[in-house]
Length: 345
Length: 257
Image (cartoon, rainbow over all chains, first blue to last red):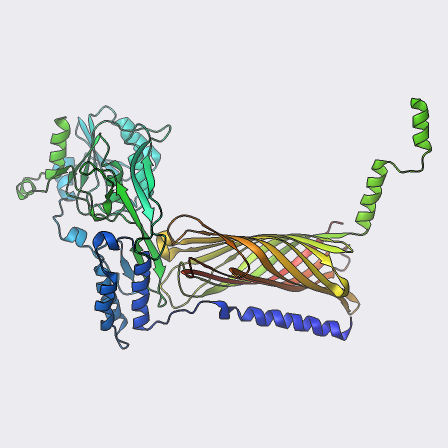
């Protein structure tokens, strides 16, 4: 091999090494971690990705004008976090959260401003008397003519066999009560799996759309949403009462949206808490994470002809609150209302 | 008549079809070198996917590649399947596991020119999948890139202490690509883009050495460095993807022809 070739090889290796070490020149500038930069990253992400500005009538530019002057270069992380959380609070959305190592911003007014309308201890002590049956995550109680099942979290996994057992074993009962009060949500697929068991044929129940651009009104086309009975599995086509309160949120709100228009389903209790938008997440340059709603879900409901945006909650068919008289007497007003309604059919 | 025709064919000096194929096959084998190459790899990735985070993540990983190389007097035709996994980190951020998986396939036909130069082109497909647990239902992101790519290379043979060594180098860039990105806006759906070279900027450079193994019957050892960098913006720059992968591979080629 001649010396020229050796030089060329060395030159080529050096060129590749230099080029590859320069790749950071092609990366996008990472925003700095100054208070103003972090504040702007939060505002901008929400501005581009949040899906309910128009529904809630929030002037996001005006919100910036209100809060941005309060940012100062020497504020502490905690002060910046609190200020930014206050800004996000304006969105009135439980799916909008900022997370840091020291706190988690939230807006829980969707249930804190309302009656709780649920007392698990009352049910355990005054109704079940340790006669309840645990079918996976479903706590069931047999009233003889009506079967009751409580599902406490959509994050609790269940098998198809659990629902098969529930609907097969109690198939002789006249009606089914599904209690999803104080269920803050979880996996939306679990909502679909339950809703699918409550129909006898494929049924269109709503529509959804996703944010697909930075403009506040940039959405994908509406896509119809349907539910359908799963092949080879048990279904329940008799009357159903779904018990709700303001703490029925997110995936729980979705289940109500999926079934509220069905003829065999009645909702009883308080309006759901809402949370109709699937959240989208990002990370900020200081490592905090942020999520905002980035989706909209619409349901066919009985009280209006056009599709209903479920973000702000779904009013029940039978609106009833827990009364103090019933509490003192060890009675669950909402459950009793559902039992009376179903027995009167 | 039939007997006469057979006798005529037997008397002819022209070889039959089967004989001609066999002859061509023997010539092909005599003039072709081919290897099946297996190559464990050490990788280092630097990535920035602003759909998930503005931060630049980087970290070590490992991978493996299988190649088939056909070397003829006038052309060189490598085909490679590769996969790698990296665990990039940014130390100062909140806890969360960032996983980056890459899979690629390439076949490239390279015409040999004088002076050790090669030019050619081929098809290169890659899938980059990223999963960041911290981002919950926005945790997944991927890019699918299929490119018609042009390449240029330069090879040189030399000896060190009477051992023959071949230096190979190659630079490849896409002429036109299909880019698929999912999910769109961190949420849902699949966005497709047809990307000319100024839209998807991709550079793949490799350089390395191969040498015949002692008593290896034509089998070769090899060490290669590869740099693959791509940059792609979508939706007017709203989402920006930058990914560079440095690979050091130590392979062995089993001679099959």
